[in-house]
Amino acid sequence: QLKSEIFGRGALSFLVAFAGISVSSFLFHVVVARLLGPHHYGTMGALLGIISLLTVPIGAVQLAVTRAVIDAETKGESFSMTRVTRRATAGGLVAMLVVVAVTPIVDNFLHIHSPVPMFLVAVWVPLATVSSVVQGALVGEYRFRPVAFASFVGVGLVRLVLGVVLVNAGLGV
Image 1 (cartoon, rainbow, N blue to C red):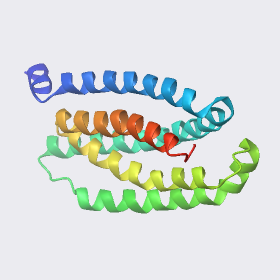
Image 2 (spheres, one colour; image 1 turned 90 degrees about the horizontal axis):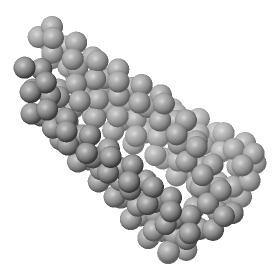
Image 3 (cartoon, rainbow, N blue to C red; image 1 turned 45 degrees about the horizontal axis):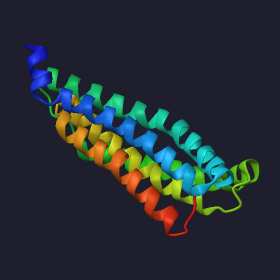
């Protein structure tokens, strides 16, 4: 019954979406690397490394919310998305300020030559944190299809399309 319930709620679409994200990510790197050239692609690679590091605690938030939703549902209690979303927003804003504060150090170390890319990473942090709370709650409720769709479109397609458009517009990294 558990298997049919999980697969009936879109776990397979979740799997397919993340396979699609992997293909899209590969295409992103191939296309954007050609458009940027080696010097700028190296800078982008360093920024993507920073984002990868930041996804670890953000993923932990998602996992904690998923677990809390499952625990609340098991006990027959309600789960307060409002309270958790407010906390995630506050935590994301604090993390954003930390990223902004270390921007000169990172810029100096990685030779980015502009604070703008790190500021964009900083703006991404609270959005990703709140998004992880919503995704964690949906996964905890076994509602995989909305997470699959949002992840594929947001992480897969939007990154690929925006990457190509913004680089072609002359905005670089």
